[in-house]
Image (tube, rainbow, N blue to C red; front, side):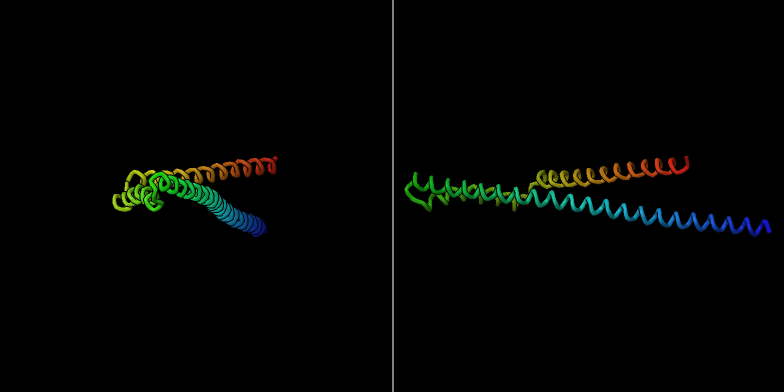
Length: 144
């Protein structure tokens, strides 16, 4: 009789442990999904902000270049010559970027991207550590 009772208690404990383990794994997966979602939304928000900033800067540069072209055209007596003088340096620099493909610019952009990814991973790690500390504190309070 004792062995059956002992087996029942052991079975109940094993079922409780497996259900707790299942719940724990579900929560960990949920936490990972939330962390990934947070990182993606942060990157998207930063991209939108940078995109708007770049758009406004490009608009200002375009107006500045038009004004410079008109000013040079007035100075030289030919409006088209002003536009040609403004466009030549832009075409030269653009051509250099297209054909030379500077590795330093590529490496700098790659380095920035890697730093952002590492920073977001570190932030996720810190949130996971704080959650583990909270879980330990809750389990200790339940025991006491």
